[in-house]
Image (cartoon, rainbow, N blue to C red; front, side, top):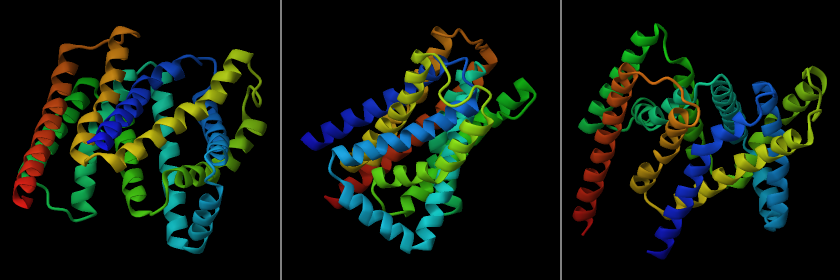
Length: 298
């Protein structure tokens, strides 16, 4: 029980981090979104090296790296994961920088439902009745948003799909969270450095001290919630984690409405309502199945 409480606490802290991170990116309006992405990669990699050194996990880290280099399929999977998470990060940063925090929250509301679809289509897991209804309701919400705006909510879909595929790859690659994140950032690191040094309009770290410190901090705010989440996932059930998952996008939506005063019409609320209802049905279905299986085990 003590471990479960610790897992719940770590999970909440991770998702609170992710929920307020748009506020962090908003502090750097003078930095181009692509520059922020590159700095995020560079400083995340350096932070992870410091973390591995301070926690004395260097020997284990090197052993896992050697294992990854020997297995070409595992290496290819991690490279794909690095590309997907980079695309996810850029889409998120760009969407927030353009003043669409509401759209960013929608992407992460949709994420668990996309997970269900991928599990059904790729892992060939059977889709439950509640899962089918939930996906139908979420799709209705997306269609309504498309009709209202006259265009497909592309950014939220990219965020949801890339993060779901990223999670799917991570699920199949047996390396520790710190090794995985370090290798992923290292894969994109050369491209990030080349862009920042040779192609960035502002030049490398050529900002005011406060902005430079925020850019360095981008590595910290990226790595910490990922590490906390990985630890939480080991200590609590998927059902509990599923509940906690909605803390992030809910905080994003609240900040969009009450801090940045983004427009939010009744039509948008109705479209989001279908997605929220889908989430409720999906969560209830998971709880029901979990309790049923628990009774069966007893």
